[in-house]
Every structure is written in C-alpha cells, then in structure tokens.
Image (cartoon, rainbow, N blue to C red; front, side, top):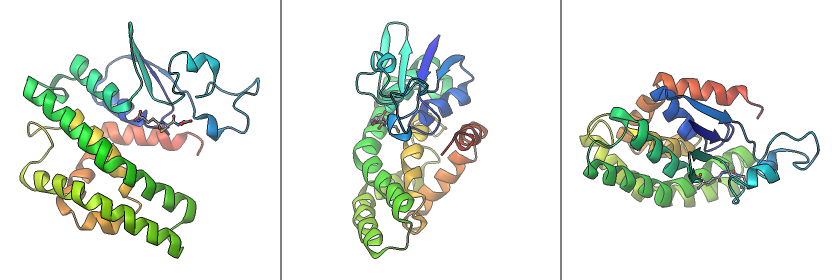
Length: 219
Ligand SMILES: N[C@@H](CCC(=O)N[C@@H](CS)C(=O)NCC(=O)O)C(=O)O
C-alpha cells in the first residue's frame, strides 16, 4: 500500500489529484509545512515538515513524500510519474516513448515554468496586484514564462493533451504548475490553447474533489 505524506495545500496536490483520478487505495498522512505553524516543535504541534518523525521519511523536510514498500520518493513529479507507471492505466505511459515524453514534459515544467509561476502566485498573495513594485516583478516573471508557455501553446494548438492525445499524468504535472500563473490572467490570454487546456484539466471531477479538499484545510 502506498503512503503519501503532505497536506492538500502543498505540492502533494499533484499526487492527490492523480490518485483521485485512479481510485488507487493509499494511506494519506497530512504533514503540514512547519512555517505555517506558530511553533512547529510545540508538544501539541501536528506532524509537520520539521517533526523528527517526518524528517526520517524525508530529510529534506518538504512535502510531498511517497513510501511504496522499500521505495521512498521526495519530489512531487517523480511521485506522480511513479504512481502513473505502477497504477496509471491509460493515465500512465503505454510505451517507452510515452514514458520519455512524460518525463520530458515534467522537466520542461519543473525547470521552465514552475519557478517563475510560483513567484507570480506569491507576489499576488503577499502584495496583491496594486503595488508598482509587485507589477514590475510580475512583468519580469511573465517574460521568463513566455518561451516555455509558447512551447506549450504550439503543442496544445495541435493536440488536445500533452501525450498520446489522451489525458495523462503529464497533463496533471504541467497543469498543476501552470495553475500558479492563474492569479495573473492577462498572461494566459496570450496563450489561448494553454488557457483552454488548463480549464479542461480543472473541470475534471478528480481535480474539483482535490481542490475542494484543499479549500477545506486551514489557509
Ligand atoms: N521540488 C519539490 C518541492 C517541495 C516543496 O517545496 N514543498 C513545500 C510545500 S509545497 C514544503 O514542503 N515546504 C516546507 C519547507 O520548505 O520548509 C517537489 O515538487 O516536491
């Protein structure tokens, strides 16, 4: 049985969405980020990323982590790709070429999209959209995103999904990173196929269920 560590309000959302799509049984341990607690070391603190017990699972002190028998994985996109290979059916790779393409999209996403997109979300969360300083920073991150988003746009203008013309783990991985751009909707209007694809991903019942669980957790 798989054990997945991490609250919904974290990058655990990625494997949690996938596991919801698949209906695979798993044990969920909702470890919270230590920085979200007033005193993560307090006696009554919930299990968190600084808890000695959790650091034995992931010495990096981050969520998500996955334990599957003797295998321990501590990167969300490696976790989703593993689950998809083991249990994914059509959401996982059917050939070596598909496995390679899913990894390729995960790396484009992790190296080109996630970083600047997360910064955009943080700026809106911390500064709102009113400050000139915030807008200047957003313009810098938006410019960094234009090339990888154009790459995605070119693919999605010609294909409904990222791999194999069907919804797969590759769509979950990339959609969960492009989601961080959504607080800045004018950027996505430059990439209409990406915007439409993201809306299709987020209309899926398993995404909506994951999102509702996320919203039900304390902010
Ligand atoms: N590259 C890692 C990033 C993991 C990560 O940054 N997790 C955050 C929550 S979304 C975390 O655990 N932060 C707690 C900390 O860094 O102290 C992944 O995708 O799994």
